[in-house]
Length: 255
Ligand code: FE
Image (cartoon, rainbow, N blue to C red; front, side):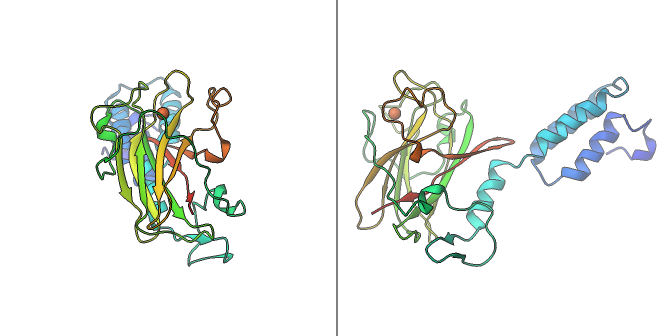
C-alpha cells in the first residue's frame, strides 16, 4: 500500500482505498481486494468523484458475508423459549417465529413430482449450479418443546437457477444430519422459477425414530406467492442479504 504521505490529496484513490482497508479489512477480504485494485489502478478521478465511489464501495464491502452469518449461527448457543433463557451468552440470531408460535409443528406440504429417493449425503449444493445466486440455508430441528434434535435427517432438493430439476442424477439433491446442537446447513443457490409455482425449496425432515415431515420453504416478497395455491407464510425463510449472496434461516418443529 502506498503510504498516505506520498499521495497527492485526500481524494486520491489509493488514499481512499487505504482508509477503506483500515476500516473494513476483516470484512469480505476478496471483495475488498477487488475494490482496492479498482481504486488504486484507476487514474486520478475528478474532485469528489473518488469520495462518492469510495463511499459506495464501503457500503457494499461493509456487509457481512454468508460465512459470517453461518459462523454466527453455528457458534451461537440456542435460546430455549420454554425455559425463558439462553444457554449462556446473548444470541444474535434468535429462533425463527415458528418455534415461539405455541410450539406448533412445521406444516407439512406436498412432495411434488420431482423427488428422487436415495440422495447422497452432502452439504455443498452450490458446485452443482455454479451460475446460481449463492444462498446458505441453515436452521435447527426442534421438538414441540423447542428442544434441539441431534442426528435428525434433513433432505433437500430444488430446481436450478433456470427452474429445472435434475431428474436423472443428484444435482441439487442431498441429505445430511443435524449436529449435536440440532443445527443443519447447506451451501446452495436461490432456486429458479418454473411455471405454476412460486420460488421454493423441497425438504424432508425426520428426527431419529420420528415421522417424516415433507414440506417446502418459501421466500418473502415473491410476486408468485399469492398466486401459488399451496404457498404458506408459516414456511417463509428468514432471509438476510450478504455481500456474497443470501443467508436463509428456518427452524423445523417435528413430531
Ligand atoms: Fe418444486
